Length: 523
Image (cartoon, rainbow, N blue to C red):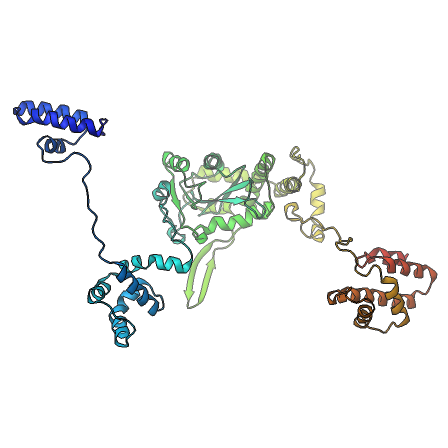
């Protein structure tokens, strides 16, 4: 019990009660001791020692131990460390019995006998400690403080890639996919992905922000849509998973909670693969923000979960063997997650019947049409479009079915992966350095069309000294190339109309869009 009496009052109390305690009977000592312990909060044995005068009240004055290794030892170790080409303390400890005599034998080092004995008797840890400041000065950085792992992270056991041992349905890997567009600054939407190890069944949910309580709510919502009970969950070491909320949720629902090793993505190979083949394939790599995007993602994942789990076969690794530097992998035949669940012995007959009933009612073309519609809506939101209502379902799929036969001609058909066309550059960013001398240059070229651009530029520099640096030669060569093309066109189209057009070319800036002029010539 912690004492609430200050040190001055306790000293006075010990003096007064100690006098009474010394002359009291055994019964009175017991009563006095009970009262003294209740007031001061001391341990009973410590209280007896205080009242009998065998212990002192207050902190014990401790005298620090004198340092064993003084500055002379540190200086000698620095010289020896440099002489060994700055090796670590363990290697230097093993080298000292031969390095020190060698330096002394050649007259490079002479140590006092006491210092010499201390240097040779120092342990590897002591050598590293004495050289710590010197090494930090050499590296130019201070030693980082060792941070203790959070309490939740210490409570969650680690599970590696090879620790699964082919579990049954219900053990999933979880991960978050950030729709940040390449920069993590600001707030953006995330996708929570759950992938079953046994079957590959994948569930996704959109999160407005990256927060632990939202992750718990999303997992609770996804549990109801899974065709099997959630038995275990394996996550990475992010703060959205390593928190008391998810740890308490798993304990309350008897869910095995494990985590991967930090910076080892292969420990979560199943969910990492689905991050690319499902989430990135559907949503792309753009940046998405706001509540409207989260609603659109919910609509997208409600259609895609059925399409992916019932109509998208995937490979599953059967075994992996290493023969020298060659790794041979063997896979099971591609199957959909639904097919693997129907073949599993750990899934009850009632769940299998429900899966067959759902599969019989699904229209893959309708699901794909819904996915494309929501992808178009997401693409509009990602480019700054208004957060309107989600697109309504088309009653007739005939138009979508007809477009499938020619969709390959359009290239990328997923709206979330289509790039916006770049605007053709038609403007100048710098002033034309030859604007004042174009007529003179053109006259020289017309008089001597066989002259090279370098010759004309040297003539221009001689006539206008210190006005045109050598770096502008390439600009003039590009203009002369245009003039030669124009001259060749005159030989083919020798009419007044095209001569007028050539004059317009001559007056145009160097970056003028020649396609419009060529179209005019064609007309």
